[in-house]
Length: 123
Image (cartoon, rainbow, N blue to C red):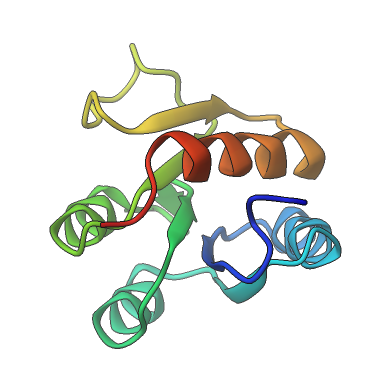
């Protein structure tokens, strides 16, 4: 059984096709997908109002930083997977966050989310 089954997974990604393909892949694995959201403001509202089990966050959302979203998620005890074109040397991110560097396939992202949910379940 997939570790994402019946888990609420937030997708914060502004690349339309990647967001859609990732949503399809997670739903195929049984996740309850929240989003996708392509803007910092929309994602922040969702984080503030919706219980989540984990999140996938791009760091550059139409030119705005997604780092503040990671802080909100951490404050809520929600583990997050950073999926970004920036590697860890290009931008300072919280050390505790898991990362994938783009380009990453929806299957690779989904597998990383499953690992994240197994190793760092939501508090």
